[in-house]
Image 1 (cartoon, rainbow, N blue to C red):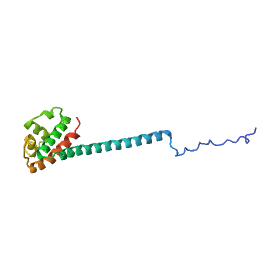
Image 2 (cartoon, rainbow, N blue to C red):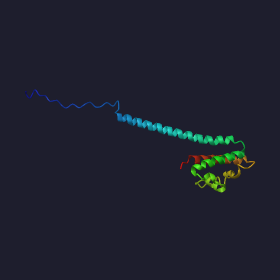
Image 3 (cartoon, one colour):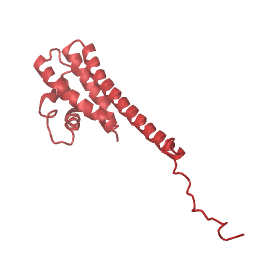
Length: 152
């Protein structure tokens, strides 16, 4: 063999991998991200449905009570049931202690010195002033929603 007969050729690199279809790891990552997005959406939708149900329960319960005194009693019952979420013994509080609990930690005295005082005896009165009830309702609704949102 002559030296001219041996022709050496350069090393050939394999072709670069195609970008499609992706490697199995990318498919797995895409599936995980998609699952997380679906789970986050389902969690938020469940939370919105729960919040709407809580608001509807408050409004429906007050609509079912015909007399103003019955509405005050229904508000008191709803607040006592919701207060158990914050403190299991809160629904057994009486008088000023109950109103101070409803005032909360914010330092406001809307219940103990304001429209919330109607809760003390409004459910037992023969005649409840419509203006007092109208002032109590948004206050009680706001506090009810606060109590229902807290998880401890």
